[in-house]
Length: 324
Ligand SMILES: NC(=O)c1ccc[n+]([C@@H]2O[C@H](COP(=O)([O-])OP(=O)(O)OC[C@H]3O[C@@H](n4cnc5c(N)ncnc54)[C@H](OP(=O)(O)O)[C@@H]3O)[C@@H](O)[C@H]2O)c1
Image (cartoon, rainbow, N blue to C red; front, side, top):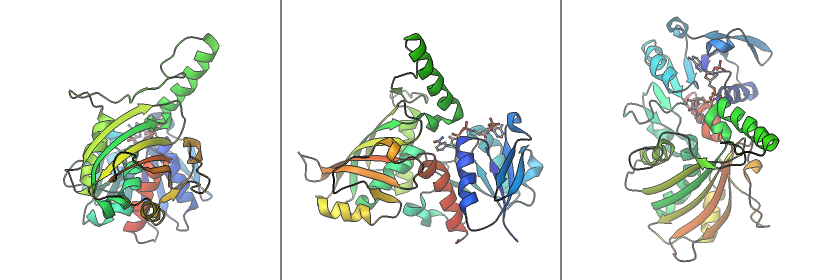
């Protein structure tokens, strides 16, 4: 019997990508698709089978094996406890449960071992996942001490609404020659700013990294801004390690790590955000030793945040849990 899976947020940017991954999977599953009231009745095809999007209610979790939550924190908050009560294992893409000590926060290539009998497994913040994929193979060898990360984040990281806003504001700015928030502009990530002047997105990068690496001593200084890019986040990272780094060994470590790819090292070409769209790998270029410190490195990292930063990470958790 095939597993019965719910995708909540099936009409969203992340939900759609998750469906694409299931579409390409060699395995077959039974699906139930949910979204908001606005999408009820819309059809989505997965492997020649048509599914109608339904409205979520408690009864829908009866008889399910897995549920992917990609519909925001409030939906996860309300429905994950109900699903878990009905013995449905949940993979949550929202931030709601990530820091809960009873919830595993997982990047499969890094800390799959942290999943025990957890019924809720959270997929981390997209920028955090991309940063840690680039740093983890080096951390294992040299022990990470401090990270300064500036991220240039795509509109789709904020869901359909923000992507629409980028398109509208850009067109309006061209038409009117006036300033629009998201037309030819960069600005601090739109999440709430805390008393310490760090945004919630930046705070997630610190706290979630500590949980995933099981080490809260690593000093992390993030700055997250939105740029006029539709898809794929870019990160400029300066990382300090406890040990001196050897640049050739750094290349080897990165090349040997699953899910990471070095971009055109031979020709010293650098990857732009668009070089990573629709790609599964986290793409690294401009790896260079800090000119002032032997235990520091600089690198430029780009990745499709809708894939490795969200849907693909959740899908890999699911595949590994089921040993596919
Ligand atoms: N975008 C990213 O890069 C990214 C990365 C990591 C994590 N995430 C997380 O993934 C989740 C989805 O993000 P997204 O970018 O896909 O957002 P999105 O494009 O805005 O899609 C949101 C989805 O949730 C559905 N939804 C909204 N309210 C609902 C409700 N009350 N009940 C059921 N479904 C509801 C929407 O349905 P309608 O289409 O009918 O409105 C839509 O399918 C969020 O929790 C986000 O934080 C996103």
